[in-house]
Length: 175
Image (cartoon, rainbow, N blue to C red; front, side):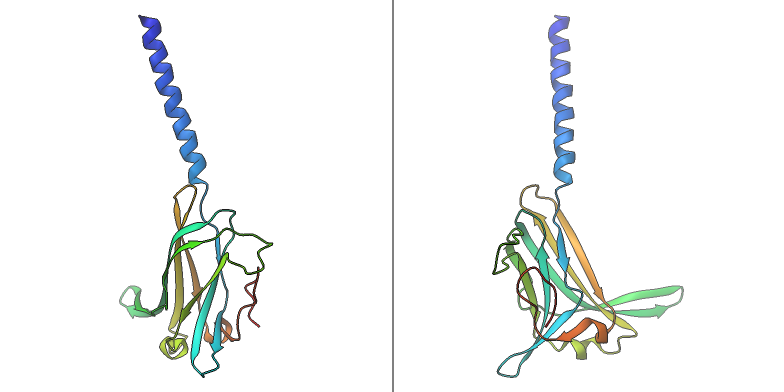
């Protein structure tokens, strides 16, 4: 009888340890996304202007349920410190279902995506000594299901906005 109870205890505890090890392994499989250091300011043939932020999936797995936000953050001085005042800048498309896995042989760079706004970002930004732009993106790893938030702050207009368009491929360069 004791042998049966001992076998059950060993089975349950080894299953619990194996589950914990598997969960720890999965928790290390998270999205790896890089965000462009600059915002591309593009002029269309019709004369309209758009601002684009490029992101790239750097994992060998697709990313799912991607959500992005662009905000102007203005720091307001109050007694005892500062508080951020946030204004949302709408993106043409702020959610995408999937961002394919990184493949250096992919000539079309499907692992990259450009988030676009048609708002006049430079005008909305205003005085860049008191405010900055914050771009945030959330993505889930397709294998583990774990998500992560990535944030990029753009502090000065002069260094953050560049006229041109992003190079195609594994690059965040604006030409």
